[in-house]
Image 1: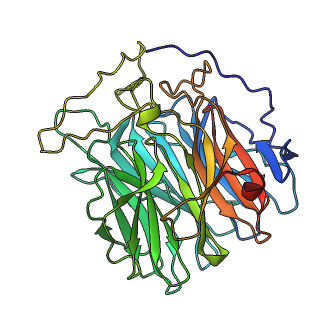
Image 2: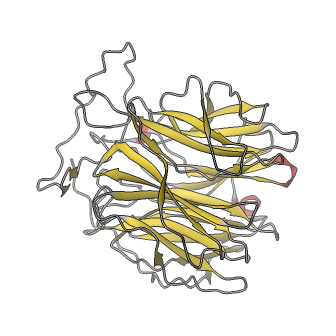
Length: 409
């Protein structure tokens, strides 16, 4: 495995939002509480603040990884100093999500796993009654199952009926093997009582499709887009009965690199998606897993060995295996005007080689732009946050016409 040159960034992670060189764009690097910062999620809080949560620590999978929150107050130009919201010294706490309930309470959801074993993950929750200033005690919302771990990444969706949809994916435990994601699949947790109880709907044919991200169109159709463990394409499925049933995911024209995506529905049923426009076809090497630098006690003593060209297939009639190491760059904004079937408008937010054969941000070995989150303001501006080299969370504000001004069709 080739060792990369250290990644450096001359910008300060001071949280100050500044005009960029490009017209119609402002940028900031959020204050970085730890050496590794990853997996941002944005939400507009009850007071109009923009809240951003992510996880931070030494390295993903190490038990000092915990959840942090920063906020951009209305009219402010500086993100607040991050506040730590979780602290389990025995588990790696990842993939935080904020949700503002109909009552005005704010939920914080996140995953909690042992080391690099996502098949041990459970979903935790804390609730705030004052807009995210203070928080109640944490509790387990979704425990791990006999089959493996339960993971979240994407926002809760509230339907006009009051129904809540929480997309999850199952990290399937395979006897005699460390988790690598070969048989992960998606489900939707449904609540019709404000989150007091949940029932599960499994998405058919979704093995390999994770990070299910749901949006609602004006006619009530639910559109879901997925990350692919196979690092081939972004997948898409739909529901026309408020999430009770789903079509099988089908590949779209957009590539995916086995990394996260996120979209938001804009007025006129336009979809704005942020993703890495790359796939396994762009990879020069592959990793054995996301956690090949982690053992059950934390960071491994030795660097990982290079992966074989093709992992040994499972004995279940399916020869596919999760692909890790495809470049996590560029970070691209795409627009669809037909419910996610086609994506004729695209523009890169950040470009680079996206090197991610190591998660090591302590020594600057990682150069990925990844795990984007996107939301829209009342003024039509798009707010995007994503990982920059696993060293900091980058925030970008884009005016409504930004993609048209310099995009490609």
